[in-house]
Amino acid sequence: MCKCFSSLFSLFFIFLFVLQQASTGNASNASSEYEEIKLRVGVPRKNGFQQFVHVIGETSQENYNISGYCMEVFNAVITHLPFNVSLHVEPHDIDSSEGSGYDALLKLIPSSKYDVVVGDITILANRSKFVDFTVPYTGSGVKMVVPVRHGRDKNMWTFVKPFSWDLWLSIIIISTFIGLAILIMERNVNALPNQEGSPNQKKFHPATFLWFPISQAILPERQVVVKSCSRFVLMVWLLLAFVLMQSYTANLTSILTLDQLQPSFLNVNDLRKGGYYVGYQTGSFVHDVLVKQFKFDPSKLKPYNTSCEYHDALKLGSQNGGVAAIFDEVPYLKIYLQEYGSNYIMSGPKYRNAGFGFALPLNSNLTAYFSRAILSVTESDLMNEIEEKYFGKNEVGEQNSSEEASSAPLSLSFHSFEGLFLITGISTFFALLISESVLWQKPILMAKALSRRYLSFVAPTTEIRVHPTHDSTHGIEVV
Image 1 (cartoon, rainbow, N blue to C red):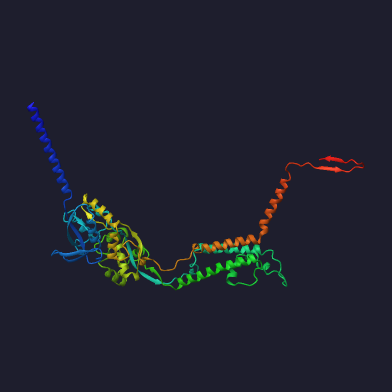
Image 2 (image 1 turned 45 degrees about the vertical axis):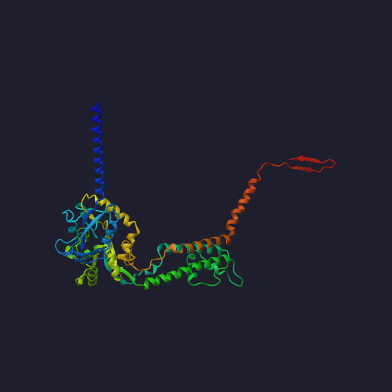
């Protein structure tokens, strides 16, 4: 009995010891889960476009300050992580001739020099082979900026451009309808008193009913119509014609006098076939896009660092030591257009990519945490405040007024005058019904005649006829 009690007591102590060890292990795991994580952060250092990353100070003396759009977004993302992070930020020069470029910076992650790379790093498929990217925090894509070409339209068919084809077609249709309506209403007008004959009998020939309303809009004549309904229709048409002529004159004047901005080059083929020099940003993947995707000769490519260098190169032109176009990612080009946009236009096709993101080691557990934190920041008002701080009220993803390919006025369409055409058509239709009442009275009279004819064959009635006789009695016949 004593042996059994002692064995049970020992088993109870063993159970308590195991339970204590399990609780201690869980506590240590919980503490390690929320333990501060130390990250070595690599940041690109370059001379141009410092709105994205701006490094002030000497890297060798470790006395520097880093700011900019990308760095401020990264700091906001850090505050949304579910754990504490300790950062050691180090700039990396990407403007040097050897080992330059963003790819060289990203390859320092697999070599364990950096844990995270923060900056204007574009998410690309070939880069994802040696690093992991978070979700993008801004859009991107490659386009070109070219000088604008000032001028006016000198086409021989400029006079038809104020109206679109559907509006011209609508004018022809409504003129035909009005001319036909007036022809019908004036066809039976008798000669006026003290006149040899009705002037309308000569004017309203079937071959001229289309020309009649247009001629009255240009050269109106008195006593051209006699009936009141015809005069009403003609008045409505003249109102429509007056509005159309005023709109046509105003738009044609704008087309012939306003300065029109057209891109000097519309597509990449014109630049490539013409042998023009083009520029790109130093250290950017855009060089590979120009060579592999757009098939440019590498000898025709010139690297530049700043937006000022972009401006000087475009101002000189390809034949004077500069370039004919600058190819870069859309966020950089938008900043350039904000500074020099009055004489330049974004043009050509767009080479798409995912956008800017943060780079981490392959298969890192932190990638998912950073991606979720980026989504939280981009969906908040904090992202708008950061973008307005560095780029002004025009956000990176918004359209810029300088991107428009042309400032020429657009052709007026039928939709602009749809209500006026509707009023004219309905007014003409009702005037025609009132004037030609015989058109709809004849069917009514025919219907009444047919109804009387068929209703007379209903059940026969009994008729009594009385025939007088010679005597006092009367003959009665029942029919």
